Length: 156
Length: 84
Image 1 (cartoon, each protein chain N blue to C red):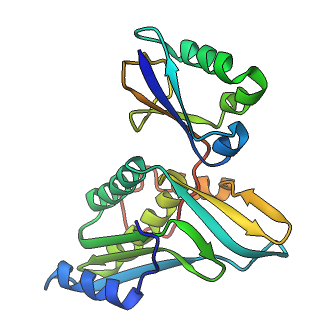
Image 2: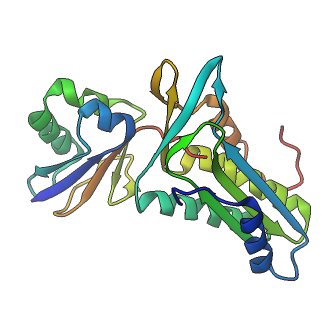
């Protein structure tokens, strides 16, 4: 977790080094601050967290993913503070021997970061500031992982 | 005993404060906590804390049911989270 921006290429290199010689697949996801939200212009986001509990919630999500798939390395970077529109917010990099585990675990981690990582986002809009609410779609995506043992099942 | 209570995000703005220290009796319950907060801050101000989608964490672990508090516990009121 950090206030400053991150470099995808630097984090990717670190992941590859940490993953070692058995790594044959690396999946990455980067989340950005949208500049428009339902025709409203967004100038930025304020990201609040709960020091200590936020880190634990992220570690728990990664631990669940590592328990579910065979992964060589996982890196998650989540920014906090005030971010301008277009900025990078979150980065997930997952390294595995083969692509199904890397793809699935990357998606799983993002779906759980959305609903179980202890952060709160406030949009700074042209018409005021509002706290973002999770959508039913976010919860449906998280719940879609319940009881599914295989990384190769097409869920959506 | 003293217990520190934290409010985050929209709740911090609604209540107009980020934290408050409460003086509670030993083994205070969930109901005792809400009673004390209401006495300290007023019923109108604490109303957002009663919302169904607000979670309570004791020492950074979510407590969905009943609980008893110990001296020095950190209580946090969390609105629905929006990470990622």
